[in-house]
Length: 342
Image (cartoon, rainbow, N blue to C red; front, side, top):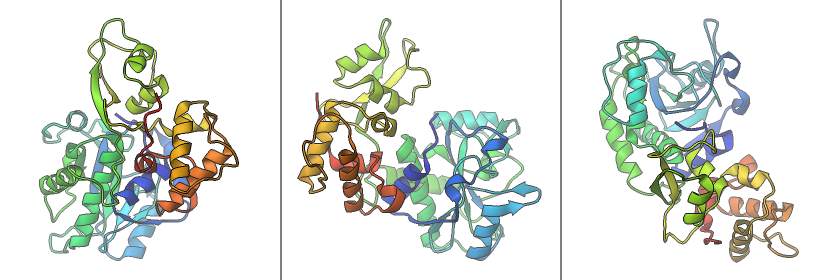
């Protein structure tokens, strides 16, 4: 399970995978969160629209209709492989499906045939509508299939999932037949192959980690000390809902030994204005990269100069607007290669 990406993280992950993104209207605040939960998320569902034409399909998925208000997905993938983002949060795309399928997605194991419709998929899955008539004759251009692959891989990378977390709508519920025209097993093979390498942008947004099995008497503090990291970073890496509760046998992601770089400590780490050697190490790398807005320092206390410097680094990486707001994200952090500070 994972906490849903923020809008900025979502866009950054897609672009890092080489996806062409169009942000539609106020998609960042367009959702159905007032109708139910959004998250924890477990995977990606691929749909087809049963429509033709990019503009009208995007409009439909953004607005929905009387019986089913929009957004009807998070992104619309057109025939040219462009991804139009229409929603951020809960969307009316998956409906109810089989809880046994959800369990298989979580475990990334073989999918059972869906028989029950007893689980809210809108809370648990990202959804992408692909423009296709769904009649078996409408073609799937190579650019569109490539975009489906890249979008799926981007979200898998961002959350640490494998290709088994990507399913078709017809694999979620026995009331749907989409997508028609290509095999989901083939798409998962493509996603798996892509996950075996670096993203198209040359940056891997997944931090270098190893697995640690919690022992009797362990606390996050003792685990952090033994792995030269911090409690905050362990909480971020593992998305722990209750950091005070650990169980013997529980598997935790910890910074991998010997990788030489600080793993991404999480976006919230910086918004608390930390006083940390990690901030100093980051600042020194920004200076080395010619992205300094410092009049003195850098030092351990996070300041507006750090944020301005990091924004310059984001712009150097090709980001703009809200994606270059100076708050570190995983993709640009991994590209910066901040040395271990402890």
